[in-house]
Amino acid sequence: MFQFLGIIVVMGVAAVLLLPFARAIEPVLSRVEQALTIAATGIIIFVMLFVCAEVFMRYVFNSPIPGHLEGSELLMPVIVFFALSYTQSVHGHVGMTMVVDSLSEANRRRLESVTIALSMFIFAVLTYFSAAQAYRSYIFDDVTMTPPYFKIWPSAAAVPLGFFLCTLRMYLQVLKRLYPTRFWFPDKRPPGAVHD
Image (cartoon, rainbow, N blue to C red; front, top):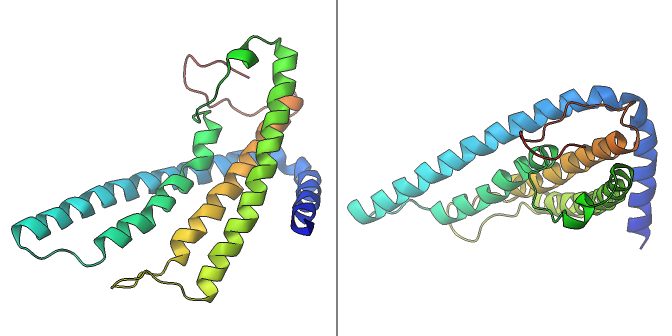
């Protein structure tokens, strides 16, 4: 319980302290999101080629690549969480908007602000606990169960990084909805999508 209260207090203090810098944070966050998304794309291509090479080695030369399954599994969280914040920034997550779209512009903005603020809190909680888990994995020098014994903590560290960046992105989205004239950021929704 105290951890949740601590997260709420830290979020409140951070929200107030970051407020004057919100307009400066957005372009930096956008560049980080794009860089991580490009990295995730590169990792997807690497995993695809790695799996193809493993299949080729296994069935043509009867010599599978050691640790191919564990290596591929450890890269999956990196792929997902590196692109999480970018997907939020372009409104790419699946959502049910039938009721929301029927509301007036002002009510829709209020409802979306509350929804994103609640999501922001949940993501902050997930950031905290996933960071604690990644840190434990680092401290215990946790490795995969089979050779070549890959370290787990780099993959685990991608999870809180993705959650943290998505929390920051949601913070900026709440500001944009509550104060659209003061905190205007370029809209990254795909063409034809409903705008804020």
